[in-house]
Length: 273
Image (cartoon, one colour):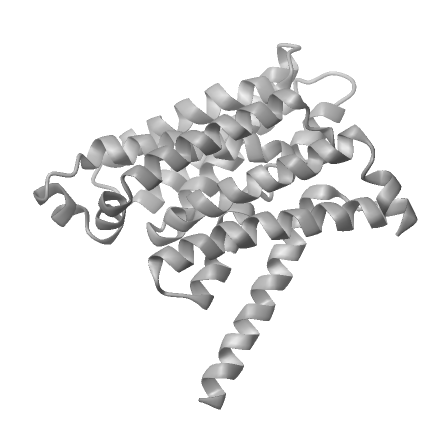
């Protein structure tokens, strides 16, 4: 316990906890709509395709994370445009684009000479390495997401339930869809540094899925999703620091264990009733 208290006095640990709280809230907020709109595969595709942006950053000898924001933003918008412009199912388009992006990323990775530490850090995540700029970016994206989603909450719920009805009711469906994809892509980009490309989708989906098991009332579901995201991130960071474990996997592991616990509890309660 003394070692943990001492660890919390270091600035990097304080930044990590602050980042965990911000990213947990952001992941819970956006993840609620991702789950209900069945966009988990979309966020999965954006996260994995970000490998191209990371590798480009390494090849161009710039900070790989500085390439994530513009690349994931453009990729997310382009993929949504392709889905709208084709008769193929969205899962087919996402599979094709994801496969192509991963192929490009792997080929570009083979061109990297020498040390690949920065690349590995982004692939598997290290929230202990986040800096003040990462915190500011995460905070700005959280504020923008909160203002956009909460100020138009009724329209967002209607859009989530039925796009055709929302369009008849005068909701600017396309504008809201593209705005949400922009925010989701940016959130994926900032979360990648914390949990890594391989686990970023779980960071968005698991808290919302856990909360959905606990409540079907939208307002309560949204609140619980944010709470689960933030709390699990804090516990994961403390676990990571106390036992010298990888930070990203520690956070996702806590989220997974919480999901299993809630799932088991709901099943037992249903059987008892």
